[in-house]
Each structure stands twice: as C-alpha cells, then as structure tokens.
Image (tube, rainbow, N blue to C red; front, side):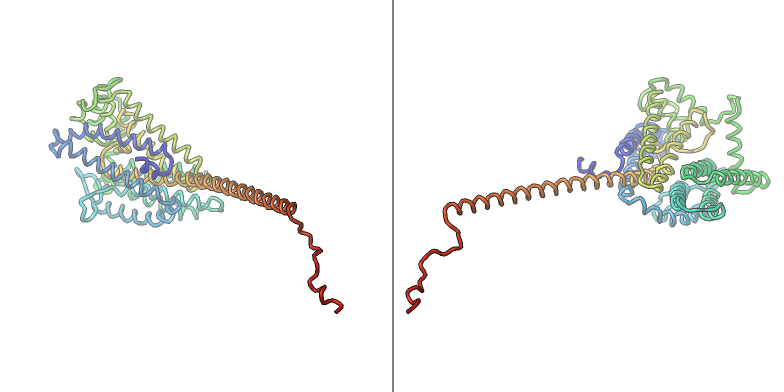
Length: 441
C-alpha cells in the first residue's frame, strides 16, 4: 500500500477528495438502483453495484495513466482531438435518434464492444484544452479579433453548435466555461463582449428557426427547453414536473439526519434516481448533514483547484486547472440546484457520484490532466530538494577529503622531523675518499 501511495504523483489533496467522493458514491448508487430492479424490472442490485465498481475502477486507472504524462503534451493532443470530436459530434447528430419525436442524438456506440458514450463529454475536455493552448500561445504576442476569431472562436462555435440541437444545457455550460477561461487568460475584454453578443444572437437565431420550422428534427427539443423554463418560472404547484415533485418530497423526507442508508422511499418513484437526481436520494437517506457533507467535499476540491492553479508553473498549466477543474464544481452545483428547484431541469450528473460510465470516465480524464499539472510542480520541488541534498553530500565529501589530506600531511611532516632528529641528512660527505690511496702516486 505504501508503494502504491508513493507512485501517486500530484496534489495529494485532490487525490484524497476525489477518492472520498468515489467511495461514497457506492452507497447511494446501490440504494437508488433498486428503482431499476423492482420498478422497471431490469437487472439486479448487485449487478448494478458491480457495474458501478467497474466504472470507478476504470476511471481511477484512467486518472493514474493520464497523470503520469507531462502536461505540456496535451497541447499537441488537443490540436488533433478537436477535429476528431467534431467529426464524432457530426456523426452522432446525423444518426438522428429520436425519443417521442424529439432529437436525442447524444450517444454513439463503440464498434464491436457494445459500449456507448457521449461525444459531448469528450468534446468538452478537448475544447477546454484547446482554448488553454491558444491563450498560452498568445500570452506575449499581439493579436487581433480577426485572427482570434479564426483560430479560437471558429472551433469553439463549431463544437458548441454541433452539441446544441441535442443538449442545450451542456452547450450553455461549455460556452460559459470557455468565456470564463478566456477571461482568466487575459483575453481582451472588448473582444470577449463581442463574442458573447454573437453567441446570444446565434442562440436567438436558432430559436427563431425552430419556431419557423417546427417539424425540423434538429430543432425539435426547443419546445422541451421552453416548457421546462416556463414550468420553472411558474408559481402554480401543479405545473412542476414529475421529477422535481418527487425530488422535493425526497429532500423534505430526509430532514436533518435522514431516513438511513438504503431506506429511501422516493427512489421507487423518482426517474433517474441513480444519475440526474441522485442528490435528492442522498439527502433523503443521509439528511441535511449528508447533503452539506457532499457540498463540503466539492468545495474543498474547488479550494485545492484554486491553490494548485495559483502554484502552476506556467500559464498553460494554470488554464488547464481552471478550464477542467472549475466546470466539475459548477456541474455539481447545477445538479444540486436542480434537485432543490433552484434551477430548471438540465440533465447534468453529479460528478464522481452519479452512475454512468461516460460521465465518470470523462471526469477522471479531467482530473488526470489536472494532477499532471500539479505533478510538474511536485517534481520540480523534488528535483530542487534532491539537488540540494547532492550539494550538501558533495560538500561533506570535500571537507572529509581535505581534512584527511591535512592529517596525512601532518603525519608526513612529523615523520620527517623525527627522522631528522635520529639521523643527519646533510649533503656534505665527511668520510674518507677511497681514491686517496692512489692520488699522487
């Protein structure tokens, strides 16, 4: 276990809060899945729990693999990923899946596997990394609105435009997060306001086209969005949607301490009780204490994102943390706000807690990239500490060798002095010359 923990790089606080949210998710998913088993008559509770375990396990494997990559490599990956996700979104939209006559083109099936995923979730990550890459590139360069419109906003509006017909909430969240990111990246405000105005104008044009051509499949969900907003703004109690009514009943039943784990009643009546409205089940079973506890974990995770973004070694790293970390927190707040009727129904899941493979895996991809940025800072600190230790060790070796050399020199001098005292080492030869016997003969 110690070896495993040592292999986890990056911010340990982010690792801890992500692990706590993932571990807590098993209880509400295990409880809420009974709705699918006993009411819908599909699968088994243990089967859904095991499926969620596989999703979480694969998610943490994704985090581990991605966080080991140097984060600067995601610059090149985003440049390749944006066109790929655009093609996936276009393919998904062209498939034209409908539910009750409405556009439901959100999912695409992986060939030969039977798995399905939402390309919009992958597009969100690719687009945020792409925007962070562009902003870091122009950090010290002069740019015009025309150049940024081609390099930055054309890909942004293309991706969002392909998501909008089937998923308004994701498209709106993505556009708002991109605007937040370019603001943090010190993009010129006059350009940003122009882009926001263009986005609003494009959305109004989309609504006008939907009203002018009501039978169009691509704009068929506009009526659904409008009806949700109308029901949300209405004060008449009988106009609340079925999900919101049951979610409010679940929250009211929970009280302060809740009914207890697995004792939810509204899970049998609340659609999407294990995904979109899982927060209502959490409050019903764990009460106000449990709901505030979950909110506290997300806020602590948000705090760690702020700290690590401030310490990021480069603008690109800072923007990666902001662009990928902040949307996770906002998505959680939106999910909670829908459950307590502060916001209209959006279909956003609760990150790391709601069941579903795509949402968990894409969340783990974002967390892995964020940890890759924090790992860079940690590695620099480790290298600096190691370099300091090397210098100290080298200095100790030098001091030891100098001391030993001085001791050896002192010993030699003592030996010389001792020999001098015992013997005469004068160069004068006062002995008899053996040649004296033949000299003068």
